[in-house]
Structures are given as C-alpha cells and as structure tokens.
Length: 502
Image 1 (cartoon, rainbow, N blue to C red):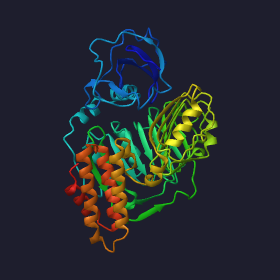
Image 2: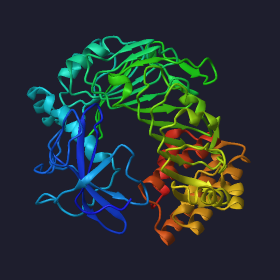
Image 3: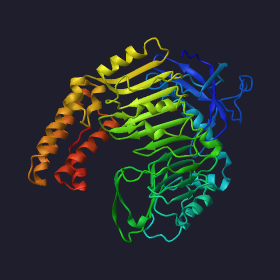
Image 4: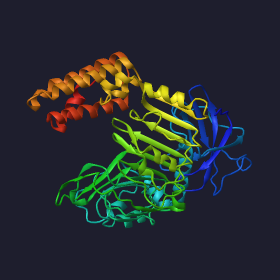
C-alpha cells in the first residue's frame, strides 16, 4: 500500500464506535499518523471529516496530539482501517514526531479520551492530585483505602471476589484489572473495566462492561502461584508506572501448582456485540471462550508449542497474532485456521518450528509478517507466496546450522542486531551454563556468573547494542543461571547490578 500525506482512514474504536486517522508525514523509514477529532456510532464519510481538527488528548496527565510514528518494516496498516480519501492536514500538525507505536495507537487513544470525558469530574480531579507512590499495610478488611488513593487506575487481585467488583463499580477511574485464581462467575458489567487479564482454572462465565477494550484469558497455564489466602491486591497508576499499594493477607500461605494439562475448560464471555469491539488474547493452553463470535483481532501466545485448535469457535477474526516465547516455536493443528476464512493479516513471532507449508490456503490473506524463522523456511515462504497477492514480511531469519547450536539460548535474538555480538553472547551463556551445571555448591557460582557479565560488558563496549530490552533479557538469563546454582535471588540481583556496565 502506497500512502500519501493527507490520506484518511476510518476504523472501529476499542469499546465501540468509529474514529478516523490521517497520514501527517511520510519518509523512508516511518509513517506518521494522527487521529482526527471525530467519534461517531457509524463510520464517517470524507465529507464528515473535512472540518475535523486533530484530536488533542488531556486524559489522565496527557497534554498532546494523538499522533505517533510507525516504522514501516515493523507493521503494515491493520485490515480494519478503511482508506477513504485524502484531505489537507490540519494546520499545526507536525509532519513527524519522535514517539513510536503501532497503527492502532491514535484510535485507541480516542477511545481512552472518550472514556475519560465520561468520568465524573471528581474522579478526574482526584487522579490529577496524585501525590506519589503510597503503600498500605497488610490485612486490610475492606476497600475503603481506595477512597484515599484517588489516582488508582489498576488493580491486581487474587482469589474470591470479597467485595472487589462492588469496589470497582464505585471507582470508575479503575479501568485495568488483573484477576488471578478468579472464581467461577465473574460479573464486571457495573464497572468501568476496560482491560481485563483473568486467570482461573474454574472460571465458567465472564460478563464484561459495554466499553471493554481487551480481554486476556489465561485459564490453563502451568505455573506456581503464591496463594496468600487468595487475597493479594495491588493497585497501580498505569500511566506513571508508579507502584501504589499492596494489600496482603498472609493467613494460610500456600504454594499451589496448576497443571496446564488438567481439564481445560471453556468459559462463556458476555460482551457487547458478541465481542465485535474487543481484542482477545489467549495465553498458554487456553481455549477460545464461547460468546465471542464477532471478535476481530485474536492473539495466541505461549511457550514452545501453540495449537490452532485453541481458536475453535471463533469465526470473524481478520487479524491473528501468534507469538512463541520459547523454542521450538511449533504450531500444532494449523488446519484449524481454515475455520477463520476472513483472516487478512497473520503475524508470527518466534516461529522457528513452523514449516512453510504449515499454513493452509486462506482466500483473503493479504499480509503474512514473520519475525524469527530459519533461513531455509524463509526461502520456502518466498517461493510459496510469490505472485499470490500476499505481502510477505520476513525479519529475524537465522541460518539453520546456527539455530541448531543456539535455538535454546536466551540471547538468540541478539544476533538480529549484530551476528558477531549475538553469537558471542550466546557462546558466553552456553559456557556459563555448562560450568554452572558442573559445580558442587552455590559458592562456586560467583566467578562463573561474573565472567558472563564481564563478557557482556566487553561486547557492549565494542558493539554498543545492549539497550533497555536486552539489559532486561540479560538480567533474566543471569537470574536463571543463578537460581540453577542455588544462589539466593537477592544476592544474584546485587551481583548483577554491581558487575554490569550496560
């Protein structure tokens, strides 16, 4: 698709309704887009938008245009944007900005601004009086503390309801909820929850408010949880990433292991228009819930193996995002994708175990975006889709022999920035892993771990490639090795921060 400055697209808003965005700048690497100040129940025409100015955001603590730059190589325009024509860019809109996000950001911000404008003024004023992070004592007996933290926008909770939904209904500023070990029946219709992440092996029914934007389901993922009497609560300011409060009831602390292979239950979700305005994410072995026949965008994320059978029951998606966090990156039952005949965009990240012939023929597919694939599969994909009308985007292709040596390495993707640096980092980790597995006591781990960090220091000095994300990946890998050696977490954290220069 060739876009020009002034091109206008109309698309659905998260939670319902329609908005519009416009191209404000085009260069070789990025396209800059801004939202127009128009929200309606039905798609606007070009004439409806002729006098619309740029959307300006003042929700929470924002004071900016709803404008962002998108890297061309990272993402194509989503299928639900309908390009309807060209209009002059409103005066005062810059042609580029140094803020980067996905195509969906401007329209999602229109929806967030709409939700903000609907809040009582007292709630908006309370948020803007945010004094800074505050911690509350353990053992709170009720939710009255929320009246004191008027800036709270997010809650993390574990276990039975215990007054949670009533508290959310009374505090409409809280729009994000993470609910672990959730009960069988979850009814949030009276709340303002916009983004819900829910885990619970026994969840059978979820009722969402009409304006919900996203739903993440994680109902059958292998993990260990610290139950704390099923009463851990955390409230955070989602926009400042400020830790707000933690309420822990430490009665009857128990560790519990949830086995992903125990009975996988399918719950029913009650959402506005059968999920038409909702983005759905399925984590681990979770299966698509009943009731979301009209959901348009679905993400399936997990470790080494995903199954397309998890999507059974969905029929309307135009976008499917598959993401593997660990090797081998295999997709089981790919034939189930034929049950999604409207698919126009598929993205796959970490798909090292998906052969070129695995994806079935999809009549409406327009874009296949793959990040992380063996070079032999990349070549086969080019051959398969050449001349078909499907745009193929390939990134992170790696040599087959290189992958044999490094597929399980946590620094595998560092080679995308620099093959020599990434390969050296992988070898340093592999050396440390072999040494750790050969020690007899935790005390022998310190020089091994220090050597790893010093090697990463030297690589960063030479190649200058360890950014914030890679620093976090290095910390995670270091923590895994330290834990394998029996080094306490606190000690490992101190060592890593003391030794690293990146």
